[in-house]
Image (cartoon, rainbow, N blue to C red; front, top):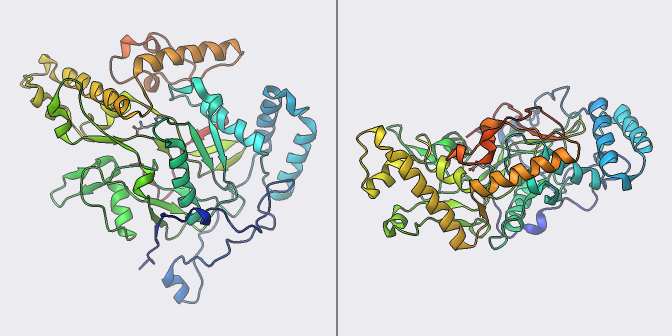
Amino acid sequence: MRSRRLFSVSDLSQASRQSPGEAPLGELPAYVGRRAAGRMLRYDSDQEASGAGPAVPPPDERIGRADPAEAEKFLRLFHEENPEAGPVEPRLNQVLAQIARYGTYTHTPEELTFGARVAWRNSNRCIGRLYWQSLRVRDMRSVESAEGVAVECVNHLREATGSGRIRPTITVFAQDLPGRPGPRIQNEQLIRYAGYRTPDGVVVGDARNAGLTASAMRLGWAGGPGTRFDVLPLVIEDARRISPLVATIPGDAILEVPLSHPAYPWFERLGLRWHAVPVISNMCLEIGGVCYPCAPFNGWYMGTEIGARNLADEDRYNQLPVVAERLGLDTSNDRTLWKDHALVELNVAVLHSFGQAGVTITDHHTEARRFISHLEREERSGRVCPADWSWIVPPLSGSLTPVFHRYYDDVQLTPAFVQHHRKGEHDG
Ligand code: ARG
């Protein structure tokens, strides 16, 4: 049986950084001279007991190797858009030498910040890119232990959430190195609600997360109180990719908004709520051929994500029949448009409740207009703004927004956030 690695991030914030003896990020790749964190981590007790030591999966030859062509493309972009950084050649030569010697290289803090912001700018599916230059980058490249990742994820949540004025933020943990992958988080977002599958197949909570919920429980999580909105623990793997750490998030790092409706007092008795900050945590940040597998990032919500998908989709919270029933709508026939009517009221409730709670949220009309300004600004800067129509158009009232009435270049540029489907990862 796997050893149980349970961890509660309570007031361990000082445990976040690794030992001060870590190699600084400077001329040489950070891993040169890097030591393991200053304490013994237990991985798989059976393996250790057998005397054979932990079984480390054979490293994929390609993982952690930076493609020199990608590095060059990125460095040229960085120097072109940041003239104050001077000519590219000296830095390029240095990076190519590092790659030749170590298989990879380290970014300067300026390159990392720029790379992360441009990865957002290049996110074809994101309608909220107008503010890409304001992304706050938390450089945590020296953190590679699962415990360190858990602690800094909680600090990320606290900083990004504030008291409701949400700040777009990314935390970048250790990069992949040859033979030593960076850590990674199995949860698709830092805050996700459990989906408990009952013996009759019904799911209590968010069915999207049923797989991760079952897996966290197999790893030793006792489960939450059993409500429809129990926050899942983080499931974090370190370089060894065995026996993940299960880390619960302290409640005071999780801001949630109970939903009510401005006109219908019964609405709040439905007991619906949603968390304030969406922090995507299972996408890899790729910059100049370097892969950061653990780089959770957040913006703020657009109301429809919650009101027209999370709470409305039949395979998520499926709340339209409930709302329609309370509204007294005729649900006997699709042509009464009861779903459409209920959907609008649910979305009104989401925007109203976040507004009342002082939590940043945007509506799809405003955000669509902002996206068009962003696109025009990008074109004026001589860049293409890559976009995927099927993701940009909101799932409610699409044709009422300007983003509906045109096509986009759907090219994939780098730096980028990419989904690496790797063994043991949960989509939902
Ligand atoms: N749609 C996802 C959710 O509802 C969040 C995706 C990121 N959204 C954002 N506004 N940054 O949970």
